[in-house]
Length: 254
Ligand code: NI
Image (cartoon, rainbow, N blue to C red; front, top):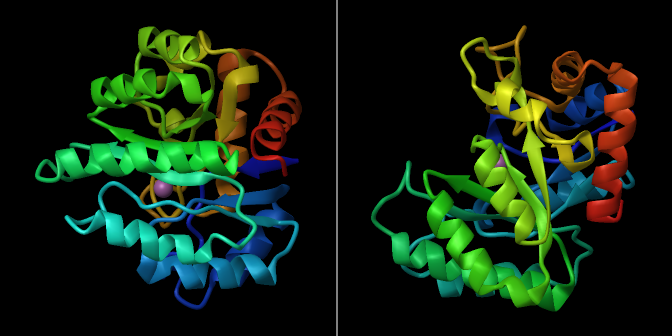
């Protein structure tokens, strides 16, 4: 069995096919799906899809760094209206200086606020970090005393950055479709990251693995990523499934 630790099957890209995509995942051996939250417009839809698939879909709460505005404090308040619901992580949160260079300060402050929230709620964190490694690591150093745990989703950093992350606490590395791309440097980095620190993810509907690259991504494609990881590590796909599933169950309590 596999777990997709980062999938947005509630995204508009699935318009009307969300439940079918969940069922295709389960049929492909991807028995558990973690849904990171983005922002208010899709939040209700995310929870409704999760409610229709108990024990399969595990929703989270978080304000995504490219979705927040100058009113981020009110947006987090709005998010907290859902606080009574069972959620499995705070995410996805972090910083993205690729898509948005204007709200750097707001992104950093919203990230800090949500790390505090993860601590208060005793939940793991799903981090979105794009062209912001330095800023993210500085903030995690600031917050080290909180004893946070979580995952660096869609990891694209170096092995040196991985080692620095490990010194900051209990952090996993999220690996997805990029691993299957021909030109990617990720396979080299992944060779030096133990399987015990890796989570599988798709980031559906984005980052579709080979042989479906160019199409809409979905959780049923996790086995392609697992197979590539197995090839790089020189182990069986079953072993990749077993270890990464155990990692995800431990981190998210699912
Ligand atoms: Ni995502």
